[in-house]
Amino acid sequence: MATDWKAFGEEILHMMREDQAVREVLVQTGELFQGYSPTMEKTHLKHAQILKDLIEQNGFPTIDKVGEDAAGAAMRLILHAISWPEFMREMETMTVALAKENKVPKPYVAMLMDRIRFYEGRKQVYGTNSDWDENGILRVTDVEDEKNLNARRKEMDLTPLESLVLSPLEEFHPVDPKKRHEEFVAWTRKVGWRTV
Image (cartoon, rainbow, N blue to C red):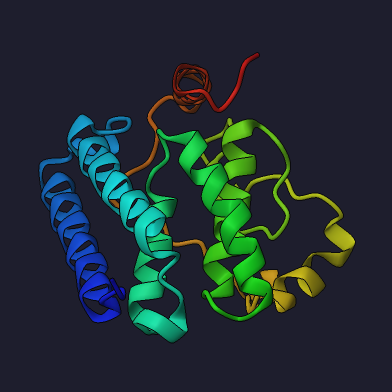
C-alpha cells in the first residue's frame, strides 16, 4: 500500500504541537527547570516511538514527501528523544546521508550530531549546543577543530558562530552549577549515553 505522506506529515506536526503544549505547561509550573521532567520525558518517548514506527513502515519523512515544516518537526522530535540514545544514533546515521542530498533540513542534522556528542561527553562538530559552565555562565560547549568551525557551519546552512545569540529562558539559571553538572553526568550514564 502506498504511503499517505500527507497524513504522515500531519501526524508529525500534531506530535510537535503536543510537545510544545506540554512544554508550555511545564514552563508555567516551573517543573521544566528542575531536571528532566518525567512528564516531558514521557511525551518525548511516546512521540519518538510513534515516529520510529512510522519511519520503519514508510521511510523517512523527507522534505520532498512531507514538506519543510513536517520534515523539520520530525527532526525536532528526534532531537527531543534524549533518553533514548539508540534511537537518536540510528536517526543520525539515516539523516546525515539524507542531508547530503538536501532531503532533510541540514541545521537540524548538525544539531543532532552535536547533541549526541554532548551527551556522550565528546566535543561537538558544529557548535550548536550550549550549556551552563561551572560558573553558571551559558556558553557553547567544546568544539573540535575550532579554526574550521564556521566553514563546517556554512556547509550545514548555519550562520557563523559569532552571529549566535545565546538566549536562555530568563526563568532558569542553575543555582548550583556544579551539582547540576554532576546530576547531568549521572543521568547520561543511567540512560546509556556514557559508560564511564
